[in-house]
Image 1 (tube, rainbow, N blue to C red):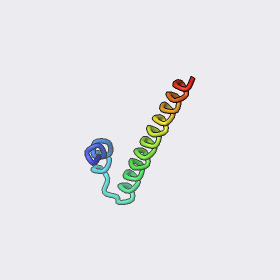
Image 2 (tube, rainbow, N blue to C red):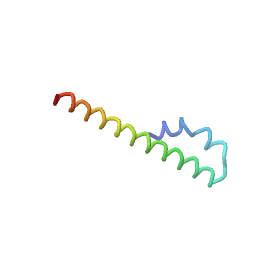
Image 3 (cartoon, rainbow, N blue to C red):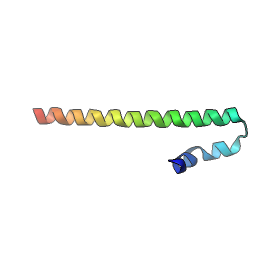
Image 4 (cartoon, rainbow, N blue to C red):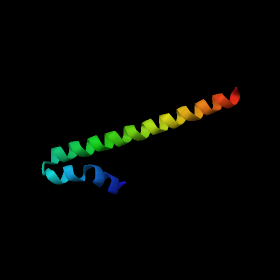
Length: 57
């Protein structure tokens, strides 16, 4: 996960020396990853429920 993080935000972190800017970049990355994973779980749940409804017909 660290290599993905470095690949996505590594350039931005290297350009800034401000700790508040670094924290903002880190927070935005973590927030985005959290909602991406949450969305994938929701989508997987939707597909599994649709599959169960098809089998019950």
